Length: 220
Figure (cartoon, rainbow, N blue to C red):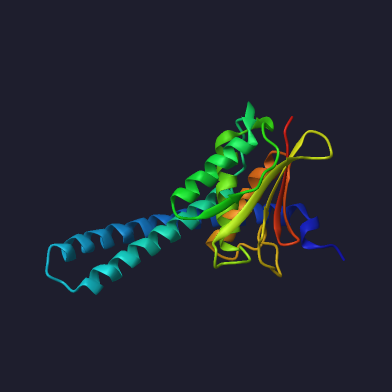
């Protein structure tokens, strides 16, 4: 018996469904933006009157929630689009990661930079790879094994097979699913997009032995 995916008409239907889903996501985002506009107007009215502090706090939480939902929808839309790379030569992997870690640490997070290889360069899309590293670092912080010290460890090394960079985020807790494929919540949606960007560069992103392991070809 043939599967549904073996028929061209079913593939076309899946493509149509994908396009329709993206349009629905766009529409939902527009609705959220409208709700945020009304909520912001309401907050300004509350701030001008002698209303209880908990009411201002509640409206603030509502606006923050709308912002997070809109951001997630934007990520889903971006995931549904092809990754178009604008590579440039000489992008230093360790330098980009250090900058991402420094930015997160300024915000109160702790990314422990373990000594690895310096000066690893490649032909990469600087802006997209920076986004991917940011989401990977944030994901590692959320999945760290020891939540008391707030630390997550990242290392960069040269790959043993050809011209590659190997980046590992270690000290993560055990998971019974693949965080790069589950879409289980905001953080894992971003991890899925990070993996898609890495794969567009010809690399791979895996979760194994309680680590994120990313391999990126440098000469692509």
